[in-house]
Length: 385
Ligand SMILES: Cc1ncc(COP(=O)(O)O)c(C=O)c1O
Image (cartoon, rainbow, N blue to C red):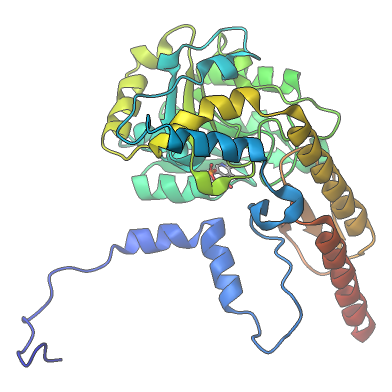
């Protein structure tokens, strides 16, 4: 093909990076895009999104005016227009921890996603491996794969409230295992780990000489019997890196404010060079918007509690609809009622293997509709057999 009447060079010396194309395809976003592209355009029924974990567009999940005002105030103050220093959120996170955090333990990131990218990249030394939960959050696999960090999977056990199979962790780990990841409250299982189980996770990590990455992006979103216990509580047993953000609890994933926290009272992460590497990663990356850094302290500290009560009670209502609704449809089963996060895992029974993640954090009336339609679908097809 000629360009401006001239023939092109013999060959272009650049091309796309196949590894990135592949990494992106295995994320939740990648799979959902593929499904949405394959919808029947002529079908006029509304699409009810049970796939992605962003309920911000639904009226019942609108964030609080308090948080919106905090961001506006930070913008209007003109104090946060340039590069700003890291704001300490250590105090807020320390409330539930025996070993108090200092501002030096907290690194602000662009959502929990960048926190996850940072720690996975830091650990990706040649030959190293990481233990990830199955089922889990595929972004870890995608990011580790791209960074050349070998992934090994341990199982979460449905019959035991999706607890970690600690025997398999033991069996998978070797001298190159740097870390294991837990997601609590759980995505995709909707489980909330008990205190004693988390303690055993820390003890296992200590025995195997690895650190624990605790993804607590759904922290505080619990509505069952098990209270949320931050993994940092066990930091005196093994070093813990906690990842979080305001995306889920405040229902503002677009605001892109997260954190990576080192819970390390024994100084092991510093001694092993992990803290310096985290700083190195963040020095070659971009920061969250400065007005968000300016607003986050106020948002974390002073959001009125009735906002959280309303969100948690809506999530509880949605989890009930999902759990009861799946009981009513013979081809799917939900082994345990979700106790936290925004998701449930449902297993297929009749003629199908495997599991599916259902996002129940949508408008409750739409969720009702969704289960009615799935049931009708089942009945239509069951009759044909
Ligand atoms: C388990 C888990 N970790 C991390 C993230 C990323 O969070 P953020 O939107 O704050 O980047 C998500 C988002 O869905 C998640 O489900």
